[in-house]
Image (cartoon, rainbow, N blue to C red):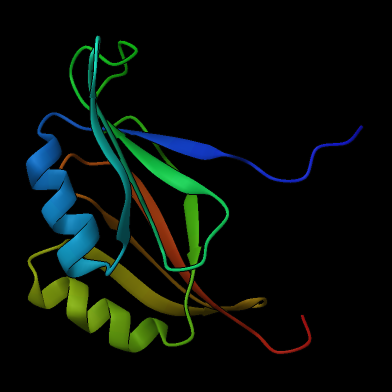
Length: 124
């Protein structure tokens, strides 16, 4: 096998502009692609320098159900500060809690897609 990385993860959303405001303005992701395609708007965001991007897939782009993505792990250097920022922006946040591999929290985006935040334990 010669696989090097995942290209993108699809996040099904009902309103791409609302999702963009969350991922760009709250999470601090950068817009990597924003263009009209025959099927609809192709909108991708990512943390700065990331190889894998997130496609904010709106209506007409693949028939995905908004809010159906789960278990997407985002690694952060400060889960506590990020949770406070998310809560201040109105996101439903659970945690953070200590786990054997670090400190972790969960939250949902405006469409209900489930994401996790992790500050990794050193040496784990």
